Image (cartoon, rainbow, N blue to C red; front, side):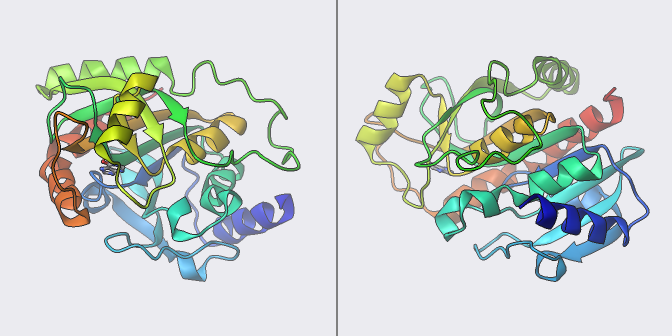
Length: 270
Ligand code: HPA
């Protein structure tokens, strides 16, 4: 496994002169940010050795290297979801590669269903913590020697980055929520009883990504900031139909302020 990761990292390093320290996983809600990146090198996932290929509608598959807010960045335009049938090792392969490329900060976005009754569709939620509800942990199996066998998870989302994001949002006049993200395998959205059950467990929002990527990012010692766009509300008090189209539309509606927030964060990062 480590050999494959090294081969992919070497392949990329031979094809781009950029050496970014920040990576952005452009999930729903951050698609627009790709347009703000001054792209210098772009690689289709299908051309990158050992990379899985994205299949889900609305997710492109490109790895971008460029400049954002005066800083070199790497960005994943589209990600790999467990529900697509990829193994956990495949889902998190890009984060392993990022680590070998010298990335120290990972910013990840997603769309999520809200359970916290004070949330509204269109809210931006900064992720303070997560609950891993996937049927498998990405670190299961032989330990890849990029981190410890038993990984500490007391601060999966970096508190300094979280504080910085909150300060920037306040300065920009963008309302943000803060909360716990529960990651499930999908691809079903939740039943009203499931939304309520996840709420009772302590989650504020639920989605189908991010948790595996953050676990592996932490395993490699990268610090993480996670952002959810609340695209629908669920639970017995919010029994409404949810469609992929609705989710995409709701995520697009906040792309502009979210892109501004992330851009400024990238600019001021230490
Ligand atoms: N549940 C799970 N994943 C999601 C949701 C949801 O309600 N909304 C967007 N992604």
